[in-house]
Image (cartoon, rainbow over all chains, first blue to last red; front, top):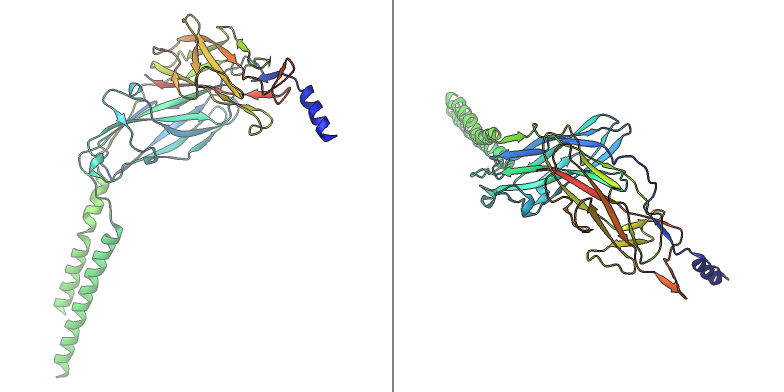
Length: 191
Length: 184
């Protein structure tokens, strides 16, 4: 009986299907971003730098925007710019931004280049994509060009263990010296 | 006593030495240039569209003036534009039924194809999941381009006699077309 109903259902199923719904003469989400291009110069391997992006929501309702990275093809990059080696060197805080109606919100972008000589003296380009999370049929995305040039020197980075360990060690040695000096003095007094 | 005090003072000075380079590292000379002089936004109308009720393995076209992309006249730089599509999914249950967007302009069972054509240009260009240029030249502030879409629906999921069917009937299948812009 169930099989028969199923068969009848499929037979009755229309061969027609609708693709994309609700025609309406409204524009795709209206928003903009600033700045549209960021150039970082002399970022030595091992260093970290940050900047802010602002998203402007020009609509009467709140929207959530997602930030991601995108590697453009060679023909899309600025002249002399190579592909950014690793997208994980770029992070967003927050990565998903809720922007109120007719207002703006910021997100902080952090760029980190690992401390390795092979990343010195490079010119890279990567794009930062801002995309609305709620989407209609036609969707607008914006890209921000991020141009990164690294310095020639490599920053060794702060070894906190070494920075703390050396002073502590020296102080311990000083205490031992001080202790034995007093002990010797005390012996002089006894005898 | 005096030797002890001198020892501690020396130890203190020695202890500070390794900290100095660590502090100096914070004073790097990184330059960040935010190009504030450049600003742009684009508008797409209409945001939504329906091809209505469609049959398997059939081609549908919109008017070539159906959609309009406009670079906001208040923009201060030209833009490069890109277009990409994605799989179409059943609106009620996206994981239950979908059509894959073809990358070869050919349809198949469960595979559909999409094209766009900018009004005044020669031919339809296939839309795939890989981004391609929407317009071959940069668009300046106030520039506007009208375009249309062509849809080729998938081949039927099954056939009964001479009648072809999708395996979900009277369902709404939806997709998205993304147009991206970057400063030229």
